[in-house]
Amino acid sequence: IYIGPPCFFIILGLVVGTATERRHFRSLERREAALSHVLMTDLRAYAPDHDPGVEPCLVIGEAVIATDYLKTFLAGIRNMLGGEVRSYLTLVNRARREATLRMLESARGKGYDAICNVRLEPADIGGSSSRKGVPMAAMVASGTAYRRRVES
Image (tube, rainbow, N blue to C red; front, side, top):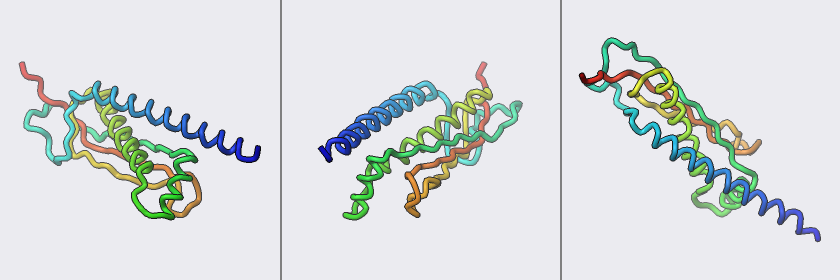
């Protein structure tokens, strides 16, 4: 009787958390495919085919992804035993991809079709290092958006 409710909530957290994560990964894949035509590089200079008549601009994408309590609990056990915390790797991966996509969507919305000087800056805003709250991965993607010259 006493272990029933905790087991129920653990299973519920596992099912809901896994479903949410899978849905987000499917969304990321679909959006990445739709934006695959946008050129993106970490090189500082524009591509040789840039359009000098269109002013480049800074584009930014930000994402904060939080983990669920079940993964936090399991990561705590992994932390005591030592080893790689894979659940947090997926958290950072999702934040990186989401921030990059938001940057690409911002550039595309402004009429640009290429981004150079792409930078990714991670941050831990959830306080996992100080054990104050639920771990979160924050990622900021930034770059210089420009338009490539249209060949006639």
